[in-house]
Length: 186
Image (cartoon, rainbow, N blue to C red):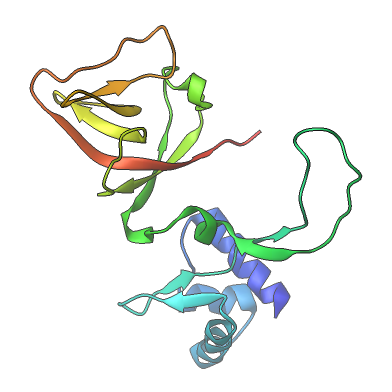
């Protein structure tokens, strides 16, 4: 079963979607949709996949990563590799899947917060912003990513780079999303 799950996970990563039942026949080498249905039910029972409201397959634990232990970020210590758990990156990073999307970062205004050009930010649409959150903001009709701040009774946006000035809205400030994670691939 692990080989079949790996094939489905590879398809999902390559196509950014789950395969159809017809595609699963080819991927798994089955000759009938009935055999695919039986196999899918086994995957559902084991928690690898689920179904959405329309009956389409959705991934659940196809992207689990082993958690092997702790690493000291201070003084060096002896390292030991011990399987502590496994975790799905989706479950770790995403609370509200239907409201979550990613944006690619352009510009250097948030480098002090560790957000570099080319990074991806995972944002949650409709989340209530709190002062101090990094947000996706629409200020006077233009979009940007900055810290959400408040001075007195006025909200404003603050960059994390001294070369950029604070932004105070002239007409309106809307916060459509809050940044939940930064993803960088080395």
